[in-house]
Structure formats: structure tokens, C-alpha cells
Length: 298
Image (cartoon, rainbow, N blue to C red):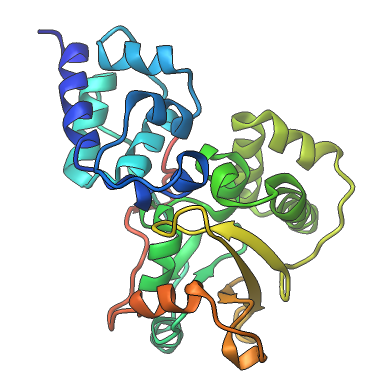
């Protein structure tokens, strides 16, 4: 049996026990699933290829698929480090590239502040690379643990279009505007330029928004947007973004994703607060794993 043919055995073994309801955007597209496992057709949709192409991959008829696409499999199937390594060796005949790890330092007191938040909270740098996130954030945005840039995920990844409701108008256009403006303000920021270039290369729609769209948004603080949450079927949730920056380091941004119907706002509580309470942050920080200065995928 060839290396490529052996890959199909691993993929089928990994697909079988995966809880599809925990995959961002799955239930929005396919509905709630009472059994474990993700089909080949579902993997094709979630990773942005045709069903025929994915079937050929598992039958060993695709030679050296792109690293960026293999990273989609890593996220959808929630593969650990050893499984990711195995995927790349059998699919491309090489070890996977090291994950990108931002070099910015996080003050311990900032880390503690993020960890005690009951709602998703994370810290990113000037290029939207994630420096730190809490356990509640990992529940709702599980891609963060794979060292993925916020802008790259939201603007180019297939599951983002499934999880984020009214993706282009409410999410992509404002975020592309922020990114475009930041790149114009910081022409010397090499990492920011890399993020812009990677987004344009990966996705034609995102490239069009970055190049031609005239939306003007400088920050998301106070924005209310709708999305689906992993493990909650096709229920829609509205969240409010609160954005803060330390006075000592304005290159960092602290994001809090708060349910818009939080009781403190005088509105009735929905399932979102209950979901967040089940995902209370741990006492230890979640820091993106990887290697400093090295891109996660190309």
C-alpha cells in the first residue's frame, strides 16, 4: 500500500469519533447530529473542496495537497500534534511547517485578567495574531489553539462563512476595512503586510474587499453581530464586542465577546450565558503554541 493510500485509513479513523456538533459552522449547515462522525461529503464542504476531490484524497489519488488545505483538516478534525505530523507526512511526504507564534510578551496581570473573564476573551497584537485566550474563547473559537491569525481565519476560512451570520456585510467588510486602514497606517509593519498578502492570495472575495470595498471602520468596539456557536445547533446568538488597549502598549488589543442579552444589560438571558458558564476559564493561560516568527502555513 502506498503512502497516499495509507492516508485514507488515517483520515477515516480520525473522522469516525469526531463530534460534528463541535465543529464551528457544522450545525448551521447540516443541522444537529445525534451521532459521532463526519462524512466525506461534509468534510468537502467544511474544507472548501468538491466531494469528488475529497474522495480522491482518501483513495490516495491526490499528490501533495497544499499545506494550507491540510491545516483545514487539522482544525475540522481537531487533530493533536502527532496526528497533524502524521497527516503531513502521509499527504505530502514531509513534516508540517511550525505553527506561527507571535513574539509579543504578555504581562502576567493581563493574563490573569483574561483568564477570570466568564465570556470569551483574547489578546491580539497589531497584526491580529493571537497572543493569549481563555477557555471560554476556545469553546467558541476552537481555531485559536492552532495558532491562526484572526483576520486570516475570518476572511478566508470556509468554516468562518458558516459560523458568522451575514458574513460579508456584518463581518468581512468591517474587518477588511480595519485591516486595510492599519496596513496604510503602518507600512513598516512587515507581519501586517504578510497577513494582507496571504489573505489576498487565499481568497478572491476577501481580496476584492481589501482592494475595492469602501467600507470605513476603525474598530469593532460596541459592534453587535450574529453567529452560530459550536454545540448549539442552528440557534443564532447575538454578541457585542468590547475592545480595550493597554495604555502601556497600544499595539495589543484585548477583545471581550459578550452576549448582547446579558442580564446586566436589562435584557432576558438566552442560552448563550449558560453556554459561557459551562466554559469558565481555567486558572492557567492558554498561549498559542508554535514557533516564533514562523508562519503556520503557506
